Length: 123
Image (cartoon, rainbow, N blue to C red; front, side):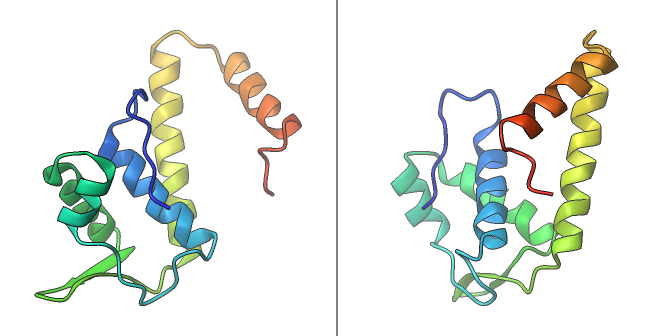
């Protein structure tokens, strides 16, 4: 259920954050579902518990999950519009970084259009 790519340039905590959001949007995780503990998840993924803790802190900050002392972390009643807003903010940041790196607007548009043609557009 929880997978990460150790070869990816994306930090592990970001991958985990995105995976939890994806599982919620796909209804594989539902409101009130309990997440594995930080230690359990870190052990199963083979990563440092601090990495999982950072992902959980960000998820809690964004109100995707909530924690109860001594009981664990649970899925919040997630507003899909908020998730989309966060995704668009991440996209804007990535696009700005790409432009700074010398990638042209045209190249970005072609990349987006290619995603639509390959079935990645879910609109």
